[in-house]
Amino acid sequence: MAKSPIFIIIINIVEGKKTDKMKNCFLRIINLSLILVFTSNYLLSQKSIENNQQNITRLDSIYHVSLQNSDTTNAIIALTDLGHIYSHRAKYALSYEHFWNALSMAGSINDSLLLARIYNEIGWLYSYYKRSDEALQYYNQSLEIHKRLSKADKSQLKQIVSDYYSITTLYRELNSQAQCKQYIDSCLLVFNEMDAPKDDSYIQAELAYYYLSQNNFQVAIEKMKDTEVWFKVNNPSYLIILYKFLGDAYLGLQETSKAENYYIEAINYAKESLNHSNYIPVIHEQLALLYNSQKQYNKAFTQLQLAKQQEAKLFDSRSLNNRPLLEILDKYQKEEDLRNELIQKQKLLEYEHQQKTDLYKTIALIATILLLISFGIWGYHSINIKHKIEKESTRQEQAFQINKNKELIELKNRELAVSTLRLIEKNKQIKELEERLTNADKLTKSEVNKAFKSISIDHNKNWKEFEARFVEINSIFHKVLTDQFPNLTANELKLCALIKLNFSGKEMANLLGIGLESIHTLRYRLRKKMGLTRADNLTQFLNSLE
Image 1 (cartoon, rainbow, N blue to C red):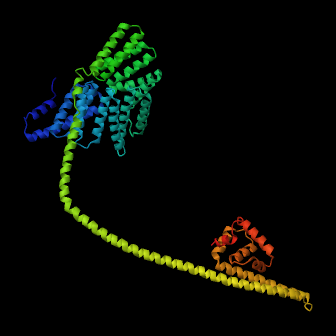
Image 2 (image 1 turned 90 degrees about the horizontal axis):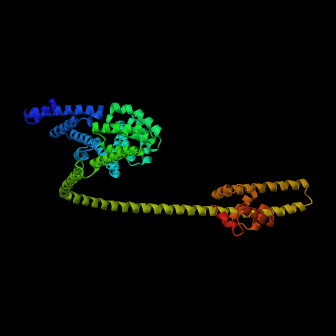
Image 3 (image 1 turned 45 degrees about the vertical axis):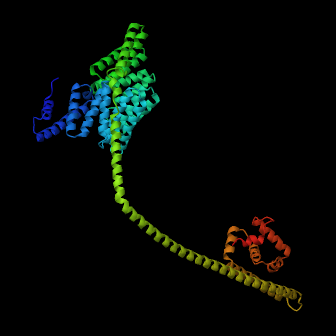
């Protein structure tokens, strides 16, 4: 194969036909040029990275030039792109080796996007071998990175769609249709959140395959036909997959001629592009079913043989293509373990050195802490003792004030009681005077009534004075009583006051100017209003209201 001028320049520089200074300069310029050219082609059409053998040579050149320039990032990109090409050409051993080399190198740089892409590519590789657990593990690692980055960069939503799409195809191959539909919906949901969404033909194609799995053949065909033009322009190699499923749809409708044409077209595309070769055995099996339904048994047998041969070539461990795959060791894991071991040793040495350096500091710190603790304990005890003394002093002062208030209330209540007893005595005298006036012959009736009226006014005035003094002395009791029992009458309130002052029933009868039976009736009504039973002591209840 003829070498390009740029490639010849690279070889000449590497062979030393220029000075070292010029060599480094040219290497950097050519490296950047190659990367820009390749990246531009890659973004414009995925076809250019899959179908052109020249891209393999170019990527290999970029990889080696990047290594010479210590450009790890572009070396990893080149390795990953090479792995991608080999995986689509069913060269799984080479693909596996390039991905693991890229992953091993990626461990030395902090580039989350590169790691995510490698994880996704390794997931695809595992999915070809139906190793769903490993595939999901790597897909989810890629998805986790993209979700984290999307919080600050909305452009990563496109990569999230790509991760969901990868998981969708895995569940489709596993015939897990419920999970497949779930991830199709997730693809569409995130796709609609993108600021500048591109064409969603891949997602619509997967949606068509889902309808096909539900035997909704006509809808599936319409959706696949809608995407066919886009794939012809942008990624013709994907037509291998699309035509395979179009063949399945027409086979489901019993339109065997159309189904056969699409199957054969898919195989032709696969042979021409050397891509998606893993679909060839499946297509031969479908053709075998088609010919068997037409009773063309020789053709059906031939297709089964081709399917078996292709399956063995692609996936059998005895094939030359895949035998190296079983011999490839997990280089990334070994290098990672070795790196971790070196890190641990380095940390151990640093730790031992730090221990020696910090020994005296630790001792000084402990001594300082102990001293501070001693001062703290002493200060705490001092403050605590002072606080206890103040607390005890306050408690005693409060107790003294409470006792003083109680004694003062009792003293005033005794004075009030004495005053009330005097009022009782006065009432007796008034009663006697009333009887004498009633029986007097010399006084006129008007003079007697005038005397009675004066006595009555004095009596009411005495009660008002009594009530005012009682409320003043027993304000808390009076407030609780009236708040708790607002419906008490004036006589009932007087009775409560007299009970509070420990007056007997006879004394209360004299003060209120009623009979002893009336006092008992008044007490009964009062107990009823207060909800007391026979077992409840009225005097104790009233005393408890303070």
